[in-house]
Amino acid sequence: AQTIHQWPVAEIKAVGSPLSLGCTIKGKSSPNLYWYWQATGGTLQQLFYSITVGQVESVVQLNLSASRPKDDQFILSTEKLLLSHSGFYLCAWSLKDTQYFGPGTRLLVL
Amino acid sequence: AQSVDQPDAHVTLSEGASLELRCSYSYSAAPYLFWYVQYPGQSLQFLLKYITGDTVVKGTKGFEAEFRKSNSSFNLKKSPAHWSDSAKYFCALEGLGYGNEKITFGAGTKLTIKP
Image 1 (tube, rainbow over the protein chains, first blue to last red):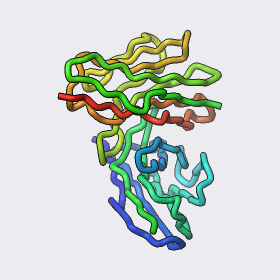
Image 2 (cartoon, rainbow over the protein chains, first blue to last red):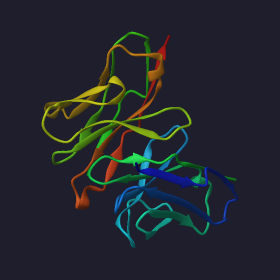
Image 3 (cartoon, rainbow over the protein chains, first blue to last red):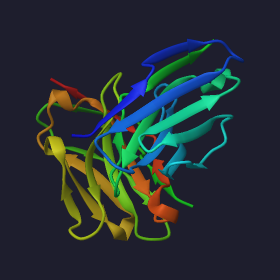
Image 4 (tube, helix red, strand yellow):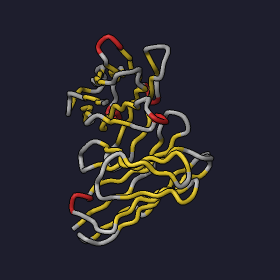
């Protein structure tokens, strides 16, 4: 069975500090991978997607970047956090059409 | 461009009632449509999808949805509703662009079922 793991579970970071969030998928080969951001009580905004190792497409510009260093790994990062980066970050995978979401990482930027 | 509209931010019903959560979309071609549920403090769970074929699709937890091309809607239904259905529900559209990767979510409908 496939599993999706996100780390860390939660972070409290200072404005201007760097950030790295991770996502791994086990049990599926070459899935499409996605990053989403959700403001508290808000909708989901798709940030990035990747259909293969080493290739990442940006959907919106939020001073974030993403990388896919391995087939089963997706990384979201920034060198300088903004207050507006606070929220819930969700990683998802798909093979055909349906997306399945990870447990998420809660980020609070102070 | 693609968009999803969930016009009802909040819906409150009594347990045992029939529920229908509204979703409309705008897209130039045939869309893939989805419903997801998010319980408080949790991630999203897949409920059901419409890709093609039968316009009434059944999903998990006793939910179903009807795709209506005539008015670009994909409403979620369940009868009877149970208090455990209280959650936030998101409608989503997957555009058939490059690789089918662009996903747009509606703002969500927070459903409260009173016991």
